Length: 115
Length: 260
Image (cartoon, rainbow over all chains, first blue to last red; front, side, top):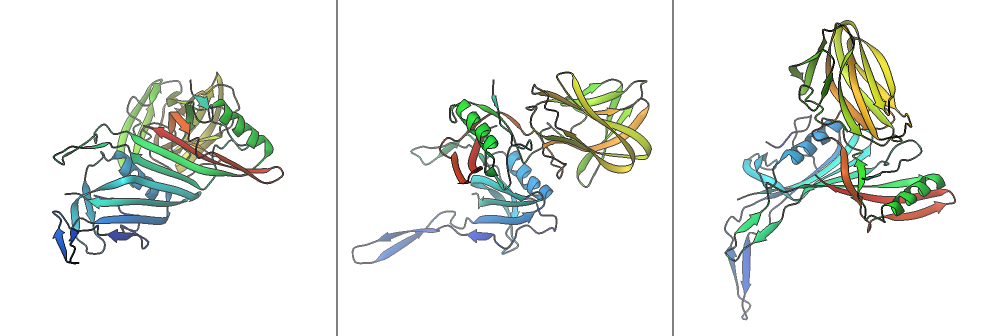
């Protein structure tokens, strides 16, 4: 399960959710268009942005990432729907940690739903 | 042999804000049938630290530039210390072989408190005993060794750091719970350093949160696994930048990379 912050919340307000394109479109010379829904088309992505984290919260996210086997999956609750997704993993790009002040961190990472 | 990273006049190796990017080095190979082979289990972890030295002096700039030239402008490997990490290895596994025991000392794990593992150190002998780690840190780096110690009733604990036969230590009286911290700015030549938590004869004490960090005073506790010393790192030559804003005031952007 993806870690929670000390306040038990899972994400902060700057975070956002992406829904990658779910279809391919074919365009024809008569300006007609046919779209085909992709298999596994409902895969979501979440970009998590945390501001002003405490040291242990930042370290908890860092340790979680470092200890994950690449491409392995974990559970994540979509904060927009409350639904738990059991096959979520870190997207390529990893995790970004910025220490801005002695006890204040900014952390960013992207999660993607796996088939 | 790795080159030693230079320090500023205050003994630190970086300045805030510091950015750390961690990513897994996964190679995807796709085949004609659209199947994908990825090295998920053998992927190494890439670390990338970047920061700006702001308004440093002529002497500090010269030191960093000399080091930059010594590395062949990023070609040679350097030893680097994670400025956002605990330099000790396995900071919460005091009962394992990651920690050397010297003398008649028993290490017993207790129930964790707030998720942090606690250990009872018992010295039943007639002489001092200790648990210790050997770390490879350049002597000019400012370090802080710290630990949280607990006991009901006054007992003593000693934090010590030894390099090239010379020791820095401090004795702490524990009555209740307190954080003990030892600033290490010895300037002793040589980079092999031994840091230890020493318990006097016939004494018991509960220990948690051992930490060795770069700094002038103790920061927040960070649990460590492999520790924050990276023996083989390098400076990204394409990112190194120097600019001066006034006579005697310079800034340098630095990006250090390593794999683990």
